[in-house]
Length: 189
Image 1 (cartoon, rainbow, N blue to C red):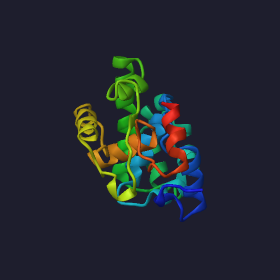
Image 2: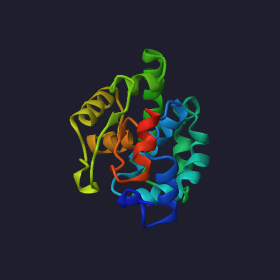
Image 3: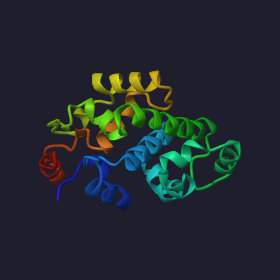
Image 4: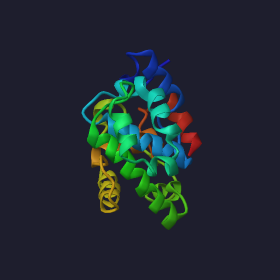
């Protein structure tokens, strides 16, 4: 079975690749989870974040957006000593700030889902990369999403983070064409 090259060196990567990566997500809570995790990944490996994912879910109350948006200084202090997550003050503060931003987006657009999927007219971009070396780190679209999120006060949403987020939540299908998931994900669109 052929997979995208990045996924073949660890069982956790394989499971994530085979079950989640690129699957179109329309659930606001899960979209928020990926937004937080992609921001936490900045400067680290995605494998590091995947290993801490369950801890993140516990630490951030299941990524309940409304609850995270109410976090106070005591919650920040609690998270800063939680060894199960990346204990970076700026990343933790951004998760809280971004939860508040999501609430504003939900008020304006009805859902985070509507806002994000509006950037691709409701349908995933279907790329046709033959190898991982062809994949961009960012695109004009990820730059546009980044710019708009930053304008709304979001942090840790640069164009590269936004593109990784787009890949993770299925806004773009970046499985290589020889990967067994490429056609499966394409059909989900």
